[in-house]
Length: 379
Ligand SMILES: Cc1cc2nc3c(=O)[nH]c(=O)nc-3n(C[C@H](O)[C@H](O)[C@H](O)COP(=O)(O)O)c2cc1C
Image (cartoon, rainbow, N blue to C red; front, side, top):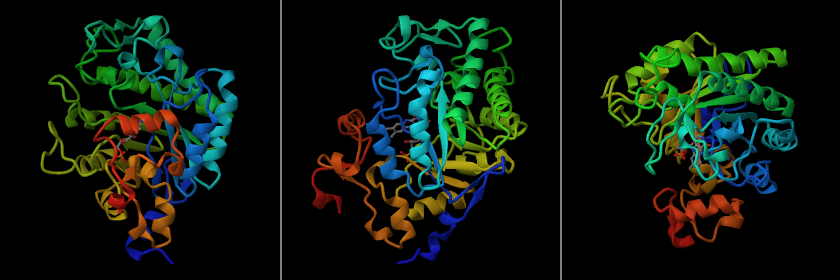
């Protein structure tokens, strides 16, 4: 069977700003699986999980890796900070690239979202001394520590290159350290790293500069540097769409390979700031001024993927759906879209090649994944 012509756009090649071409417009969204080895190295289970679902993608973005021990955000999260991590990172890059996808390592520091029980010395740090959900306080980073974390992003980039990745994605989304510096809710500093919305750009931009500097110093080949961001925060003093436009204006000067908006619904509209009647994605594409945008959020069917492209995304990322349906790309390409699964059952772990810890989260958090009782119900 052949591809249904209405989905042909998904299989067009797409060129990123660095000149690198993706073989199609479909990406796997970065998804933490908490399934790396206890020593923070890449595990065999995670390699099998990726191999099962990344074969025909254009862009394969990894689960997020932390760039320094204090930046850990999840138990059994793999690390990108030392030569000891190279072996696993190299295996991961090779497995993601097998079918022709470009392999991108997502990198972050969790900041105040680091669980105290697993952060070294229970030293949870952030832009400011924010009160945490458990009533304890994060510690405000010193200026010297901030410089050091910026360098850690550069070191992680060098490691990614040594490991054979085609690029890195700077994780400036989902409330982690980079976003914490940009947000007026979590950044209350009065030094050069805080203040007005423009001043709160200092840390995100310093990380971008360092990652690009490290990449240029390490390789003469084109190298992908993407940036992921969350366009809004719920808190009153938090990020609005207007702030995000300011961020995108600043990033426009950086010639990033792509921008990746983190959304739970690809066609959602802003809650504060911007035009409340148009989708966030359309407004972000406009503000990106020609830089390719990755759209994401509850894309399950190829019709939804096409709709995300019609809203202006150059690439559409699938997260949960690629766990539920590892052969999504193959089925759409073969004209078998009617066979795409959009639910899973509790008996599907082996069939779907999902590591234990991730499977525990999928089954243990009702409403997060479309878990149904029986195969019959899944049809
Ligand atoms: C299991 C799981 C782990 C995730 N981990 C990450 C992550 O490491 N980095 C990140 O930027 N987003 C992460 N996300 C968010 C996804 O990248 C994506 O934005 C979100 O799930 C919405 O897309 P979807 O509806 O296609 O799943 C995670 C999502 C899931 C379901």
